Length: 365
Image (cartoon, rainbow, N blue to C red):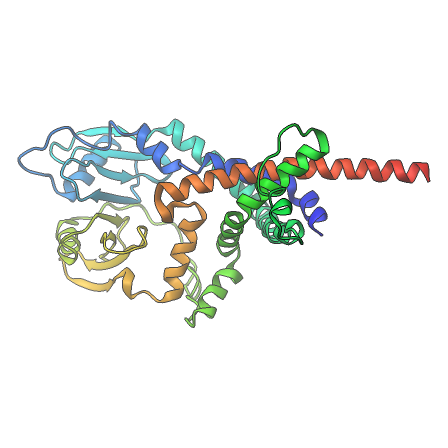
C-alpha cells in the first residue's frame, strides 16, 4: 500500500514539496522586495486621515477598485491599499504621496507557485480538478508519512539497529544509498510531514473543516453564500464617503492595536475591520469589529471569544505554512518540504529497481 500510494501520487507530491519549499518564506521575500515603499524615513507634523489616503489612491488610479486599506501601529509605516488583482499601493502617512506599488515580479512569482502548489497549475474551469488532484495526493502523502513510520521502525530497538535508520551512512551507492537516504530523511521529517499534511486536509476538504468544529463541540458555521439570494448583477464600485469616524472607533476599541485593516467596498454603511490586538499566543489571531460610518460599534468579536473550532481552524491554516511558530517554524517547513521531495525521488528509485527485479525474475521463470 505504501508503494502503490507513492507511485500513484509521487509526481504531484514532488510538485507540492518543491513549491512548498519555495513558498516557505513568501511573506519575508515580499516584504524585503517592497521595503523601500513600506515605510518613510521621517515623520511629519500631521498624519493624514484614512479617507484622505483613499482619495489619493483614487486620484492616482481612477479605475482602481481597492479591496482593503490597512495600517500598522508605527508612525513611519505606510498605508497599504490592496487593489485586488491590480496589486498593492503604498501611501505616505503624512504627505499622501504614492510611495510605490507592490513588487509585481515577486508577487506574480509567488502567485504562480501557489497555483502549482494548490491546483497543479490548472486554472479557470479546470481549477476544481486541480484542487481535487492535490487534495487526494495530500491524503496519500499523509498515509505515506504514517505508514512509513510503521514500516521502517526497527523491530529491534538496540542502538546498532536504530542507528541504521536515523543517520546517513558513507560509501553507499545505488539501491543501498537510496534506501539509507529514504529511511533517514523519513525518520527526521515524518512527524513534521504528518502535521503539514494533516493541516492541509482540513484546508482542502470542507468535510474535514466541519469535522474540526464537530469534534470541538461547536456548531459548523454556515458557508459563505448559503441562504443568500443570488446577486442580480454586479454593482458599480463605490468609494466610501468618509471612513474617518469608523476608523477612529476601531483604534479606540483596542488602543494597543498592532494593525488594522478595513474591508472595501463598504456595504450597507457597515465598516468591517480586522484587528491584530497583539495580545494572543496565536500571532495570526485576528479580532473583528463592525462599525457604522458615524463611529458607532455594532459588533465586536475578539479573537479570544471565538469558539475553539474557529480558533483551531486558524491555527491549522498557519501551522501548515509553519508561520504559527515564526521563523523557526518556517525553517522547519522548508526542510520538511525539501525532505519530502527527496523521499519521492528515492522512493521512485527504489520502486523502479524493484520493478526491474520483478521483470527480470518473471522473464527467467
